[in-house]
Length: 291
Image 1 (cartoon, rainbow, N blue to C red):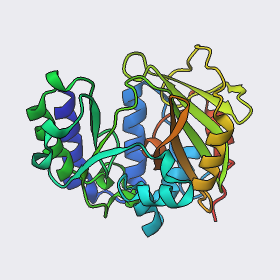
Image 2 (image 1 turned 60 degrees about the horizontal axis):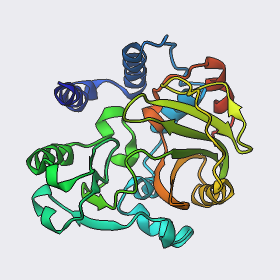
Image 3 (image 1 turned 60 degrees about the vertical axis):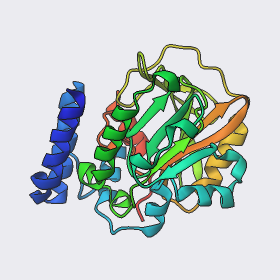
């Protein structure tokens, strides 16, 4: 049912809602997201944006930036990571495929992750190849490769990415995901996602690991999340990768005490995910300096 509803939403965004002008579409998708998640909706001020989400939606109206397209492509961005901070931060690649039929599952290890390079959430984790449903994976990836993520929220950096399938080594199934909010190359906040596959919650910290009293979309985790020993290294990596970018989110992982790169995101949640505190939507928005 979930896949069917997503397909229905995508088809409407692609062929029906595409007739709606950008500003109205941004209001509509923000309203839908807030209603679906049970949050109060407030109209976005897109003429004089102040909040974090307002400024993200403003950026979606700007002309396409080829560099952003490269950084959003999970295959092409690997060259940027290698040149900027070093190959050691890259999760080992097991294969890159143009079509799901090209995947030779017999040659893959017992566990791995398959993901598309041109969107968010189009991935499958294989923890045990002996029980992995290969036919379902092929079916899903055939559908996902036919999608263009641009139409879901009109993020232009996705529009011209050539769809591919990326197979990576599976680090761990449950692993802390450190998402650094970077403004003009300065990591300022970090979002930590906890229990993503069971009871998804989030916690936000400043760069001194002081917990902040807000969350985005999910409720605030009450778990005691220790400061990672590699925090200084992660801050340095995030700063290098976000240099000269007005805003981006740099996602990093820690596995066996090593830091790994996840992805670079320009419009987290499509600019639609609600804050637990509207005051923090404004406070974080203040860090984005619109040129």
